[in-house]
Length: 281
Ligand SMILES: Nc1ncnc2c1ncn2[C@@H]1O[C@H](COP(=O)(O)OP(=O)(O)OP(=O)(O)O)[C@@H](O)[C@H]1O
Image (tube, rainbow, N blue to C red; front, side, top):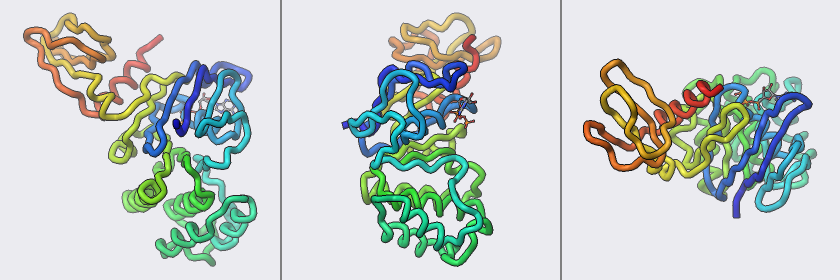
């Protein structure tokens, strides 16, 4: 069963479409990188998935059940603004979260707090470092024992050690509970090492949705002389100098004479799709 599937999904807030004709299918147990430039619609897709806002058109299903602006018990969202009360202590924050959630694993939250001495139960939330606040918010999201964990820009503004802590915690949940994770970031390098499935958005549209290895297999980076790219497939993006040209092509035929073809690196694939999106009218 898909952890998340959408059909003809669209969203606007009374103005222009923020998500348009969105079709995604995310298999259970995957760690998904949700990538796109600022304003691409990543946070909106996460909010729709968590049931915080309802679709304007189309459907969105989480583990087969349609979500229409109702919080799904199997999904937990760690929003970009980290929903925590600064005046509470860590212990008070944990108790408040436990009261707000019917399904709750105190044990899971305690495990996380015990593993991170910076998360002192008596410390004021407002006095915690950015990394510790993110870890606390993540611990509370994990306390809900979600089957689908939605993380919005969870690594932004964190130093390298805090990033390691957060990623380790997320990946341990994946390994131990088979959690499906959808992680949004506008910085692809944040997600590159952990994601096995990629959803790439631009201006409210989904440009790519698939298993990372399969997506790489479907594309070739062609290098050859300047001029027309002799490719049978779809040319996604070209760049080059007066002498040499480079092109990313989807489903290309055999390389033409004078041209070299190689499987692209994942970073290059993502960057080319984002550039191609930016150049569209
Ligand atoms: N509640 C809202 N009301 C009106 N417009 C909104 C609302 N939420 C989002 N938008 C608009 O939807 C578009 C997509 O925003 P969204 O936050 O989903 O993008 P994003 O890809 O997460 O961007 P970023 O990487 O900057 O966080 C933006 O133009 C934004 O202004």
